[in-house]
Amino acid sequence: MNLIVVMLILVGMIVPNLAANVIDLSVKKHALQLSYEPIAVTNQETMGMMGVHINLDIHKLSMVYLGVGGYGALTGDRGGFFTAGITPGLRIPFTRYLEADIGLFLGGGGGASAFPGDGDMIRAHAYLGRSFPLFSTWLGVARQRISKKSIKDTWVITVTKPFYITKPVMSSFDRIGSSKKVAFQKRNLRIAPLIGAYFPAKSALGRNALPLENKISLLGIDLETNRNGSALTGLFSLYAANGNKADGYGKIMTGLGYQYLITEKMMMMPYMQFGMSGGGNIDTGGGLISLAGFKGRYAVAKMLDVHGLLAQIKSYNGNFESTLLGGGVTVKLGHLDPVIDPFNEIEKTQINQSETQLKSFQWFFGNKTIYPKKSLKDKNGEAYESQIDFVAFGLEVPVNSWLNVITTTYWAYTGDVGAYAEGCFGIILKKSLFPRWTLYHQTEIGAAGGGGINVNQGTIYQSLLGIGFQQTRSYQWKGYVGWQGSFDHASFQGPIAMLSLDIRSAFLGSKN
Image (cartoon, rainbow, N blue to C red; front, side, top):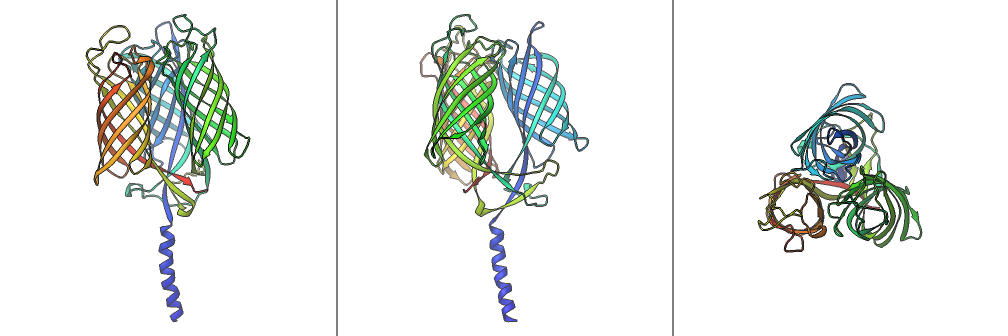
């Protein structure tokens, strides 16, 4: 009898410890969305516009989502038209396979003289969709206004590819639904900032019919992902020009590569990409481009590689053709994805703490305002408006308790400079003041251009001082003031203010 009592006491001590080693996870269903629609630039000209978004599940598997992304020119003759913003949306299921989608895009941008003006873009859509195991297709209509100009209603065709992630349960808001055990697969993610250059072919002319510079400087970032053990790699790239009379040029591309291991530390990868490109006087026609190239990486640390690439890029209905040469560093991250049956979705699961480590990050969206110096003139010799507002997006990754690294993008929607946009990298120094208040100093440098703004060939910097209030464990409000410049006393500069909402999250990192 005494032995039984002792055993029960031991079990009572062990079980809570086992439970403490389990992490409760909520399952989030997100989706990558691609869309295409023809919109009228004038009564005689139509631009084929492509949308690229990530639709974020707001509350587990609810009907509400938040789309983050934008639109760009793909066909016609307006290569270089880009916008960015957010799309609050609602999915309404009718049957297991049939559902409706309604949403409202709010953002800014422009370019390629498509819709000159402030750059604000408001777009409402209504789609009807059919779900399949691996993707969904949609057909619908859209009504939009760009730079205060109303556009005729257009038809839209859309494809969405769902993917699932898990995040730690951080509040009682997430603590509903039964927990079911699922398998996890390791996925590799590589973030690769790059400094590069185009070396255009002699036949490549600008939209002014004059030859381009022999070299066009670029700043960019590549995102690479593949399942553990798979050589097939997906790539997504964002590049912008920051010199050589091409400020305002940008490109967005996606594609596939295949990795070959040369030695334990060295890798070579041939790859191909397709996407949208234009602006900065570079003539890409409608914007559709292709790229074929090679990328090499060499491991210098467990989570850090150096890389270089050589590629050939060509527009389909413009005259732009160029060699691309670049290099930079690659940060390697490994995370665990849940294996979910799309027709048997679950809301909650668990994982043993010994199998994983939590890696936190936060992304934000908000508004940035710059007040240009009154003495400055744009490229046409005209004064800027008294203030210019931007849609702001960014991603922060903690390095330690006092340092974050950050990548940001800003898109004008007021100030009559709608084609102007910025893309930056930087660091954030942080100091906790009180339990919910934190002091920040943010410094960035990057590429910018468009909208007639004189940014000294495209390289900008900004420095901000701010304070953050932690409303909940997941949400933080930040307010900043600071200064923006362009490394030349006559170029675009002035005081800035920014307000943002930061959304904290985490992913499951593999310990192997």
